[in-house]
Length: 208
Image (cartoon, rainbow, N blue to C red; front, side, top):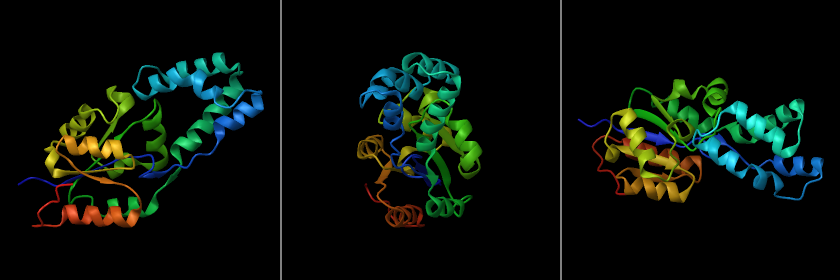
C-alpha cells in the first residue's frame, strides 16, 4: 500500500516572510542608489542558494563589495536573516503536527547557505518532518525537476503519492510535471482543506 505524503515549501508557506525593506535601508545608510545591494551581491546571493559559497565567504564578499567593517557586516546579515526567517505560520504548523504518524511529511526549499542551522534552531522543522531538502545542500533549485525527485527519493515515496505545496505558481506546475499532486498556497484554510482531501482514505486523488 502506498503511503500518502505531503511536501511543503518554507518561505511564504511555513514561514510568513513579508519584505522588510532592509536592503534599501542599508543603501540609504551608505548613500547608495536604490538597487545597489542587489546588483553588487547578485552572484553571491545566487551562489549561496546552490551551495557554491560558504557563510564565511558570504561575509567576506559583503565586507568587500559594500565597504563594511566587521560589526556592520554582522548587522547587515542580521537584517537579511530577519526577513528570510520571517515569523512562523502557526496555524499551518499546528495542523502538520497533528498529521505526524499518519503520513510522510517533507520540506523542499529554495534556500540559502546557513538556513538549516537557523531554521532548526528557531522553528525545529527537523522535528516536524521526516525529510528536509535544501537547494543550497543539493545544488539544485526549484523548479528543476531533480529537486522534486530528490525529496521523493529521500522520503522513499513515488511522486504520485505526494501533495506538494508552494506559494510560487512555477514551482507548483513543475511539481505536477513530475507526477506529484500540487497546490498553490494562497492561505491556510484552502491549504488545510487540500491536505485533508489528499489524505482522506478511499478518496480518489485529484489530478491537480
